[in-house]
Image 1: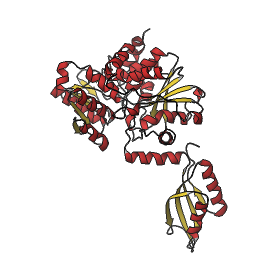
Image 2: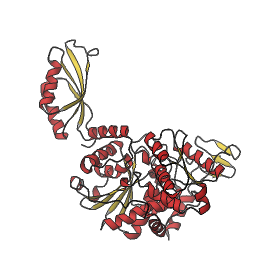
Image 3: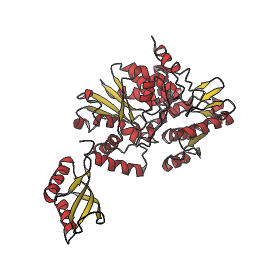
Image 4: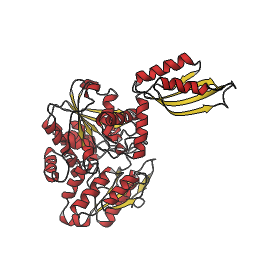
Length: 463
């Protein structure tokens, strides 16, 4: 049985009416909430001709090699060195540094291939897409370089930095829609009305083939690979990478990772077909795709060995580890592979060779600061506690001197008098930073020996 036969039943025969917002039947359409719209009522809804639930397109190894030949002069051949983190986690870890592409993301590969494959007439008209940032930047940058007009629809919650970057690449940027779902509808409608080619950021066959070129490079750069860990959003990246690696190194395991806040691929596996999955706000915004692609799902399923869902705290800790140990500033999606290892989901690969795909580095500056703080808290190095001390002269000073003597850095301190019964005491809330968890335990012991009323908050997740 070939791969097309394996997946055909999974992809076309299991569309679930109640869960799939894009499932059509005759002249009626089932939408979330159980409503049924007639054709006249949904005349503004347009579909992507390259993404058909009933006829998914499965890419081949030849598609990936063709993409590699056509884009090699337009993208970076990124390094894949052994990580300093290897000894810490008892694995031979290699980092495929796709964040070193010009726009800071692997998305350039698929975007360039989709653009160079356009017919001459369509190149003149241009293309359109919807994106939160990385796909938009890759499409705008390479459209500019190739002389192809690009329009991108970005939802209002997209990063201002990414919006401006797209404008810097001379694209027509439309900021409209509250989320990706609305932005995509707007882009598809514009494509229908203007004749522009719509390029899906994760499910277009050329996009998937372009992303697969990463897999070709990984096999060239690292020998005897036991596993490759790939972040999963819409599924285009893992579809392309798995296609390349399984053809060149069948024994290598393909591991997918997604955030608990947006487990779209995991839900699709449970449903045996892509299904709408409401997403929550996540550190890994690049993975926040509510429904995986039909083509990507059909291509990936026969090649996937394991799918992992990680908690947000582990992603934050992974971002921190990469900054401190590798001097790499990456976004949440890019750190998710390391998060899976730190959380203990890949312990079966101890003492083996594992490649982590660090897919992007376009993290918002404000979000980056929050991630570092969450990472420090998860690592036990950022501590919170409440202690009751004397409200007389020197009471708070004694506490501060104790912490200073221990080498603890106070980040924030607040006094509370109104809500405690003893008018001669004051409750002090402290946020402080320590060197490591052993140092934190030393501080905790000292405080408990000195004060009667000390309350520590939850233990850090990474302990």
